[in-house]
Image (cartoon, rainbow, N blue to C red; front, top):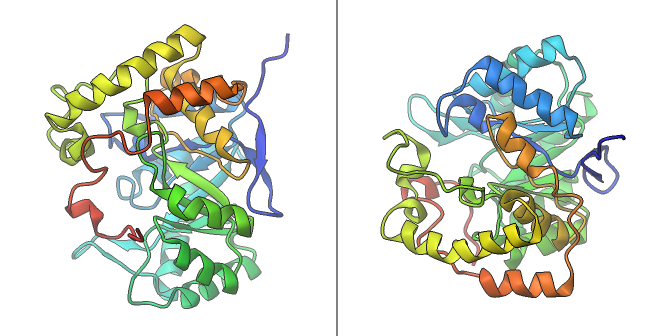
Length: 332
């Protein structure tokens, strides 16, 4: 019997076919616990096995560690994945955003070396430089497309107005913002704008940084430097309140015969056909919990029950600390 594979969707209005689920590779850099090359490569093997062909990484994930991890895999498995990576954030001497053409090109060259490729299917501006006209940035990315260096370009954590201005200069292939059952802000304009313009919407952290999985992250055992330590939703008493609200949803998933992560991914895919969520993991075990996602079909009763269990705005605490809010655009 042939294994069922993850279904595919278009990247942008007239772009390439990519799997309806991508794999976010931030975890390969150790953001959510230690990892190593064999573990990360086994995860990539598992992704290919279920039909995931789209990887999402960035030059700042571990300061190149994630890209290097993917690059060593691609050296042994050329053309195994469609690659998306990101640019536009400087870390030294201080963290800031630089969307200048010179810096974008420098980032591109460095990323190609780490990944061992000379072309990206999708290239994002990771954070917008607020004082630089977005039209200038769109022109730069248009040049990279014309030069055959990238297939499409994207923006991350931006407002609908920015999307419209950028798209008018060089059509966008994708917009990547955080979106999940407990992060619903994109419903107030970003999703509608992407759908209207034919832009793929790419939700990151679609499983709520691990909260929508079979077991909750144990905040007593994660490293003191781990990202979630500073996220208000994972701090007490918010975390206990959130788990108490999510518990009945997890019970519902179990009763339906669905894994929790597959259910939340299916919920995103059910919103419209422009969405390609990119859950992240560093292990094959967790990745295989997603494989039901494109096969789950919700009834109206299912949708109503999910809305009842986890209504819009149910979460206690913000999705970012005050320090992490520097960069993402606020628009509501």
